[in-house]
Image (tube, rainbow, N blue to C red; front, top):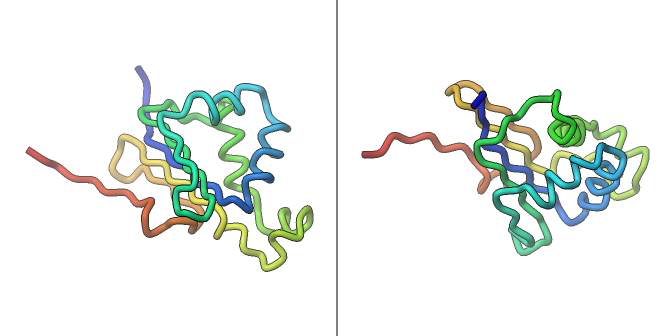
Length: 128
């Protein structure tokens, strides 16, 4: 079975061409994972063109090329994007994506970016 995570990636309309360009440079499994193997894909999430991708109970290891493609995209720095595009001349890269990964352990959480950060949050609760 292995260790599983819940993952959400939100990409703004302005960032989407750069995300697609990044995926085109990666293994073919990355494109398939993002566009065909998501558990949920919501287009125009915020009425401003943001697309949200989510995966439930996914094995999230950087040794998988599709996972590495996403983690590499998330870890791109502002200076890199500033160098390739006028879209981010205000060094606002993190405002155009949101990545949240919640692992099985309570403290196994990754969060990057600010897009829709008021909506895409982690809530852990025990109900009965």
